[in-house]
Image (tube, helix red, strand yellow):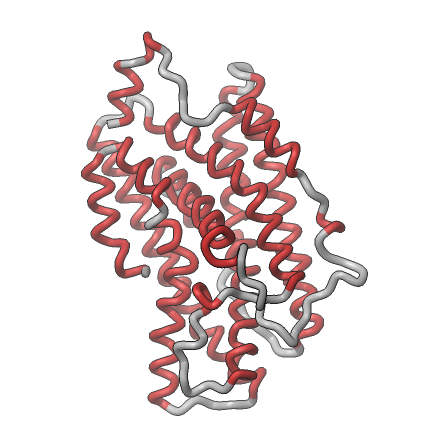
Length: 316
């Protein structure tokens, strides 16, 4: 188990998987500006879909025509902007709180985490600007769960290890979205794809720093304390899942308003069931089943990895 292993091996100074200096330097190389991605003639193309089918899963709804599937896909794109903007709101203060107590210990550690925090603040603004562009041209209100401050307050009230594991899930999730689903998809809007690519570039370094953060928090913890952290992680997951249920209802409402089509009872039930599962896969399952996330759980305690692997199919 990680807590015991690190304590036992402190004298041998076993190097961590990711290095703060190397991660910071890599992040500086891929740094981009918001104005390079959105604004001016760089606009969303509403004649195209925004999300890859592996995440949107609109083709499963055979009672929708192609135009309706495109509209639903775009609604899901707006949801993506809202959900990621929301989660960044609790990642930012957690990272700052993590680095603040040890500002004098390791200069590269401090610089890496502060750069991490600055990039998360940039991502919040990026998703807001894309959401504004969407609202301006889509023409129909699309509600989102929140407000972000309330969601952040609830999540940050949990055990730090549970929060850090949630953030680690989100970071590896964003990696999987681009690599597995978006990178080679030539059918989605170039502008939306640019957003997802640039988000992925910086989050690739954040996933490494989140791994270090989980390792830091786990040092010296007993098996019981690690189990409590995983309990808290699952509680946060349950809270987020309830939010996804509400978001799926909002997505249905936006779809019907945008298309003028009112689904019958059977269609509505199928829509909610399949789109809820699509949302679960997009925002929980893709991270929960990521090999790197499971690898971290294995280091913490193999029994905790087994717990998560038993739960994961519900989100796939």
